[in-house]
Length: 212
Image (cartoon, rainbow, N blue to C red; front, top):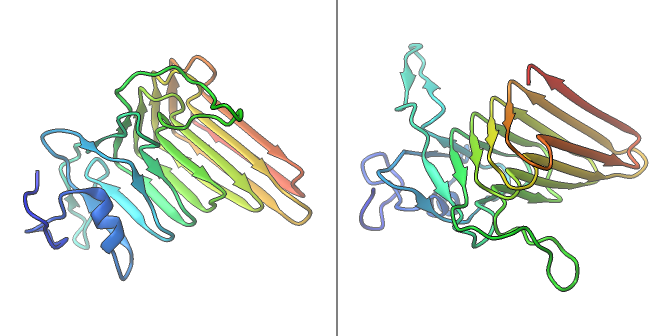
């Protein structure tokens, strides 16, 4: 609900998530408040950024939680993935959706149309996706790995996506590792499956599923 350009402070926040990502420095943490409506954006993360939505409470030095506990809604509006991750990035504490309907399809070259994907990555590693709701997308999350791949997918609710809830496809080589942890997450009403994890040609590939 911020008005004006803002400076990224708590008193004068940026009006969009992308501005926060583009201007972050230091520890590269971007805190996102819930708003009266959805953030209608397609956010491109840069390496080492943590996006922390107010749906995930922060614990202060005195042990008291900070934040409303209400997740910001981010809507990609069928214009591209709602979030595109980069190396060593985190997305936590959001409701992630695409509300403009379109059937899942490929383009003329056979490449998958990712316009309604909730969270997307292509070649990124060391990804953390936590405490989100991913709903009403084609894929809740579609993650394509090449070479070493690390994912922590914890405490998420993935529901009502028209294809797969979580799809991970990794292609490795000799010496590469593939390490996926899915923990404390629920997958509901995703017609092509809750989670589809594929790892090819890795020297070591481990997928752990806990309490999900």
